[in-house]
Image (cartoon, rainbow, N blue to C red; front, side):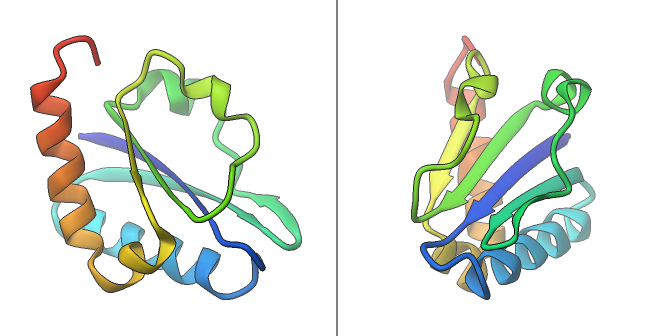
Length: 107
């Protein structure tokens, strides 16, 4: 499965990057392709390209704040979670996101 994710936290220092690393490691461990964009204090890193968004089966937004350019995910199946949950239980986010994807026929 192709998964893309965006992580962000209020200060954009630690939790943004911890959540990104946890989601990436969990997804790869489960055999999924993943690309994670971070929106931290130093700006956007690993920015998702339009082709990444087009190819994504699932979008995970693990953020405690509004993310930039969220409209680019319109029409995609988006699963939202807090950055703390992404850090503590990244596999749970992936399992729940994939389950949501299967329930939404329009995604």
